[in-house]
Amino acid sequence: MASVHTVDRLIEIAGPAGCGKTSLVEALAARCTVQLGVASCDLSCLPLALRLLPLLPAGYVWGGRRHDRSPRETIRSMVYVEWWLQERSRRGLRDGSPVLYDHGPFFRLATLEAFDSPASKGFSRWWETMRATWSDKVARVIWLDAPDSVLLERIRRRDRAHVCKERSDGQARAWLGSYRAGFDAALATLRDRRPADLVEIDTSTRNPDEIADSLLELIEPRRE
Image 1: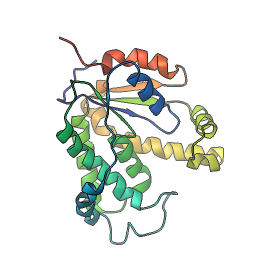
Image 2 (image 1 turned 90 degrees about the vertical axis):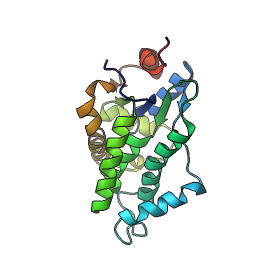
Image 3 (image 1 turned 30 degrees about the vertical axis):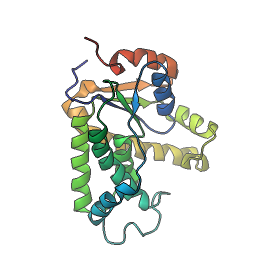
C-alpha cells in the first residue's frame, strides 16, 4: 500500500446506493476512535452559498426538477464540498484519530456530475478544482460496490425512501450506472495520481464486520 501523501488522515467511504457505506462506518467506529467528517451547514454557510451562486446559469436554482432532484440540491452540494474543507481546517484532528466521511465530498461531486451538473464554465472549473483539491486532501477512499441485483435488493428492503424503489429493474440499473459514471469522474484524479490509495471492495461477499476488521490497519493511526 502506498504511503499517505496528506497531512490530515481523511478517509471517505464511497460507493453507489446500497453498497453498505453507513454500515461500514458504524462497524469501524465500534472498533477504533474516529471522527465523523460530514457536518451540516448552518447560517454561517450563507455567505459561501451566495458566493457560489453566480457560478450557476441564471435561473438554474429556481428552475424545475431534474432527474427527480431539486436544482437547489446543486448549490447545497457545492456548499458542502467547499465548506467541509474550511471546517476541517478550523477543527483539525483530534488526538490523531482518522476522519471518516460517509456521503462525503466525492459522493457530492459524483452526484453533481451524474445528476446536477449545469451547463456553465464557472461550475465546471469549480468542480474540477474541488476534485483536485480533495484528491490531494484525502488519505484514502474506500470504494464499496456490489452487483446491481444485490444493491437493488438492499435498497428496496430497507425502510428508507429511494428513487430506485419506484422504478423498474431496467430503470434502476440505468440510474446506478449513471451514479457509477459520476463516481468514475469524481475519483479520476485520485486514481491517476495515487491508485493504491483507492481501495476497492465487493460488499456482496463479506459483511460489514469482516470488512471493518480487514481495514483496521489502514484506518487506525500509526503508532510510533
